[in-house]
Picture 1: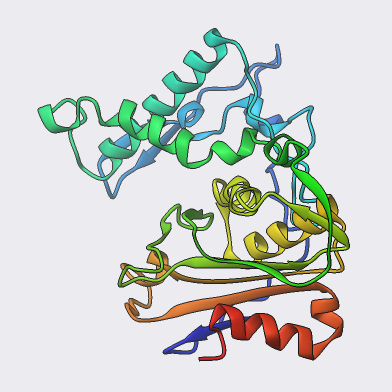
Picture 2: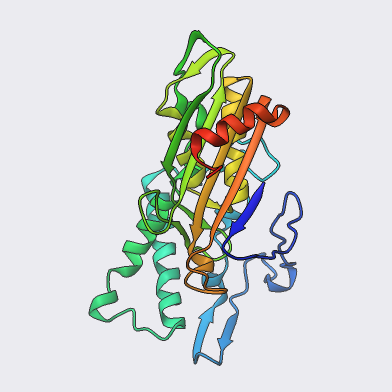
Length: 284
């Protein structure tokens, strides 16, 4: 279920398992197989940019580890290449160079006092905001599963969530107490086994600290809890305000988006689903 309040938003239908399509590279290779360095003339901005800066590093184009797509099991994670300090330093250097290029392309001077350290700050901030790519759900849960013989609904509500829209790299912003509400509610009905309460927001954090769309984020959290806990059912509802439609585009500052994922008994039984919705205040 996905709805947008205070205004209708029409979006193009997303194809399942969307994948990035790479253009042929044979024309851009020299005879020895190396990339040909090609200049892109951004005449409207008066800036010339090297194509090797614009292209993503090879280490991100093909990952030997499991990659979590929209159709893959949600407990798998995309891992960042380069675990050594040398590789991490190289990755940070490439990111800083890319930020300097962006600053030049918008007409700024990366060498002025206020921007001297911006490439480094932004690169480190982006790595933090996307740290979910090298987090593992099983490690986060850490076997905090307890056989308690409890089979009634457990709900954790008003979980603050912060993520980045993968289309514009602009945040989903705010929290329940802010003018821009964004929070997640998670409920489940155990099959006699419960999970440590703090693990539910921690699982949500794993998937929110990636480039996301709200629909997929909601679904990934629900399926991850279902896979690990094996309960009778899981319900996840998320309400958020997206800055990509607040500060740009349609510019609707009061619009919020509501998404849900119902699994197991929450999907099968309307009475159970309605009880959860009542607990989290969605029926207001």
